[in-house]
Every structure is written in C-alpha cells, then in structure tokens.
Image (cartoon, rainbow, N blue to C red):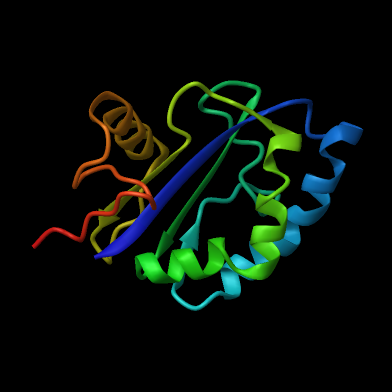
Length: 145
C-alpha cells in the first residue's frame, strides 16, 4: 500500500497578486523537491506542472494531492527544511476553511487517487474524525491488512 494525501487551501488573494507572489515563486522549487524526494510516487499536476488551475472546491481553493511510499517519506518531505520554510508562511497566503484541509488514506500500489476519491475521504474525515479510511499526520492509521 502507498499513502495518498490531499490538502486544500483557500487563497487570501488571486494567485497573480503581490500578496501571493512569494508562494507562487516557491511553488516550482517545492514541487521539484517533492518529485525528487525519497519515497515520492506521484503528484497531481495540470499542464503548468502544478495543480493550481484545478479548482474542484471553488475558485478560491487550490488543491495538492500526492502519493508516497510511506508516512515517513511524506513526513520527511513536509517537515524538511525547504518545505517547512514555506509551510511556516501559510497563514500569509491561505485563509481558514472551517473544516479539515488535509486528509491521508491508503491506496493500492498500482492505483493513483482521483479528486473524487480525495473529496470523499476529506468528507469522511470531516463527518467522522480520523479513522482507518481517512486520517491525518496527527492521528495515523496503518495500512489495511
């Protein structure tokens, strides 16, 4: 099994605004770091090489979805020096959603998740809290038998 992750973020301004310029400037570098990270499998991308044009949660919400070989591989990337540096600034660029913004779940090695599946997992997490089918880095569940 591989670990899928989805996170969504409500923009405080349009992507082409001065307020989001530092985020946009870091995006290609951070995505390249993810692509090269140990344990990275796949990430959702549009024609521009990222997923910022995909807006299934609304015009002001961006999505990030990826697959990793393990929880540790995802953690190593998320809390690695460069990503953590960008992550610390998230409140400058993103507004609160009032609901979960991150969900993790296990997928078979040969499968890639869809945005529809990701939405169902995020909805499951919101409805029931963390469990074996939808969880967070703060409350993990191992892969199914």
